[in-house]
Image (cartoon, rainbow, N blue to C red):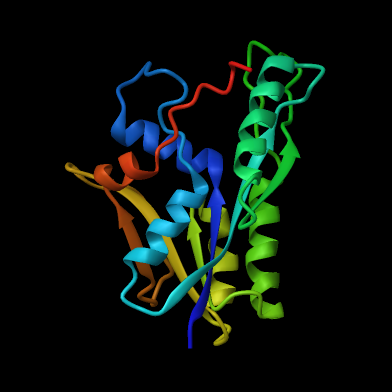
Amino acid sequence: MTDRVVLFLDYQNVYMSARSLFHPMGAPHWNGQIDPLALGRLLVDRSPFDRELAGVRVYRGLPESTKDPKGYGASQRQISSWAQAPEIEVITRTLRYPQNWPAEKPKEKGIDVALAIDFALMDVRGDYDVGVLMSTDTDLKPALEAVAGSGTARAEVAAWSNSNGYSRRLSIKGRNLWCHWLDETDYLRVRDTRDYNIP
């Protein structure tokens, strides 16, 4: 029986991790971008098991249109390019802007909670057989523990690695979760070099 795989991407976390591992400081902002569908297909195609990609869920913050129209426009173009694939669903929450913005950068608020809830609830509903979570955010551990201990779906994680070693990955104490380690060659296969600031 073919297992349905859903990939859950904490996009900003995945992007920043790729930038830090595979690019020098100050690299153009599009370095670190990835194509979520290409990444999902890579994970499924590489598996020795009978699997199909049932979906890719991308969680990301969204600039506020009145405060950052350029960033908002770039984000919308990126999301539109992803949404052309029926397998992809993008979940956004508006960034939180501090009082001293723009001196201080806006931050994501609630993205990790949305991802955690969906990861757990979709397991309960039987929406996937294998849930692959890609993030280094330890706030997601409780959801990962819930799915890994449910006995219904299989919980797996994914993380970047480079020639100097491995990046951080999510883990659960006492459980040997499968990790899909993705090296620089994998990153180059799924990277997205488009500058979304350009209409």
